Length: 269
Ligand SMILES: Nc1ncnc2c1ncn2[C@@H]1O[C@H](COP(=O)(O)OP(=O)(O)O)[C@@H](O)[C@H]1O
Ligand SMILES: [Mg+2]
Image (cartoon, rainbow, N blue to C red; front, side, top):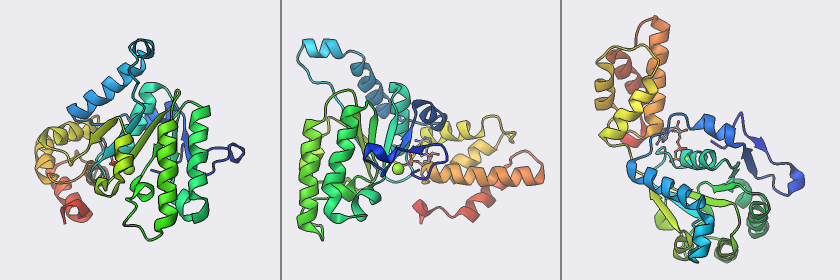
């Protein structure tokens, strides 16, 4: 996701060259085919509704939510959800590349964290930190304990001071490794899992939409792709479509079988 053909780097003058900027229109393009399980859809909808009722919440002195954490296995739509929220809120998405923050100059990690939060304070956006565990690991189990605890402290401070129009979103595959104090700072939490049968069917239909296919394909794909992540499903179906195109024939169950055998999805091994 971080290597995008559409997103552009923020100008260096703004002080952060470790993030990619996507306009809300670019975000909309990325989320044309998103499957959000009903629980998560509900959470996102409520979040957006609340942001549209700021004054009422101020009147009742109830803080509005602005920090979302998404956790679950890879390829299940965490990053995609961040794009979706940016689209819905008509805010740009700032995708922060954590490797750039952390590995470039260890001593500067904390100041980098501060810079990106300062940016988000000044310019309304969805500030998205992917692979968040890399920065928010529990203080004990890190090699550079001292340095990282300084980073975690900075992060805690930034989260506490985070206010205004921007939204902070973070995603992790390893929620167990997140620092407890950081975990508590999030007002909104979304769990992601591998697709169930309903999610699988919905996604297969979205992927096959507009592509000529035999009737049994959906059923076969749903059986075959059981246990795959959405990302794997997408790759396998793309592979199957390529086969159909080469043969100049409608997509058939054998294309799915062959594509599956060739792709050898990691999540199943
Ligand atoms: N819930 C989903 N709905 C639709 N497509 C998905 C979903 N999850 C993953 N994908 C596909 O897989 C790609 C990678 O997903 P991503 O959101 O980066 O997963 P994660 O952040 O959970 O690892 C997406 O760009 C999309 O093509
Ligand atoms: Mg991701």
